[in-house]
Every structure is written in C-alpha cells, then in structure tokens.
Amino acid sequence: MTPAAGGGGLVVIPSTLSAAAFLRWPGGPPGMALALRAGCGVLLIGLLSGAAMIARGVYLRRTGHQLAGYASAASLKPLHGVSLHAVPVLPVLARLLAMTSCSPHTRVSVVRAAAGCFAAAVAAALVWAVVAH
Image (cartoon, rainbow, N blue to C red):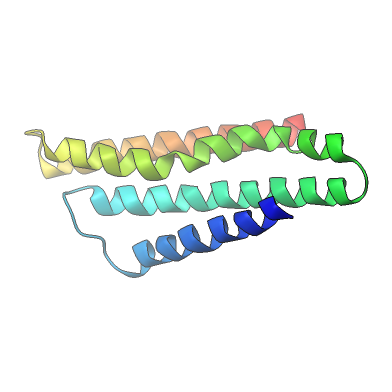
C-alpha cells in the first residue's frame, strides 16, 4: 500500500502543476509556453500509466500473486518512462534555444517538432503496451 499512497501524491502534485500551466499563460522565451504545456500534457499520460501499474500490482499482491504483481505491468513501463521525460526535456530545449541567434519563429518550430517527436514516441509506446499485454 505504500507505493499506492506515494503514487497518489505523485499524481496529485504534478496534476495540479499541469493544470496551472494550462490555466495561465507561462512566461519565458519563445517556445517555453508550448514546451511547458506539451510536457505537462505528456506527463499526465505518464502519471496515468504509473497509476495503472501500481493499481494492478497492488490488486495482484493482495490476491496472493506477489510475483505476478511485479511482472503484470511490464508492458506499460516504456510508456511510463517515455512520457515522464517530456516535462524536463522540452523546457530545457526552449531555454537552450533562447541562447541562440535563431528567430522566435524558428525556436517555436523546433520546440513544436520536439513535442511532436515525444507524441510519436508516446504513441509507439502505447501501441507496444497494447500489443505486449
């Protein structure tokens, strides 16, 4: 139950911060608002996949299948891992692009392309989770 309680906190806090990113326009260099919103959106997918892994594991453990509890969510691990990394990577990219001489339009385009790559990776990991399950 400890992972479930900790997981609950790990869902509530980032979800609240993600809601704040969508309710108010984030400041910063060109592309930062897109980076934060795309990162937070993908983060929510990671939180949901993590919650699903914990819920499945706790259920199996409580029904006497401890080893199955650890192995049952293996197909969700790539989805969980990929989707948790968008929120730190995209804003760092936007900040690094701010240090270049690229035009604001180019900076936003690069962040948009990176967000699209994360979306494609999340979609591929989701397909893998469905096929592997």
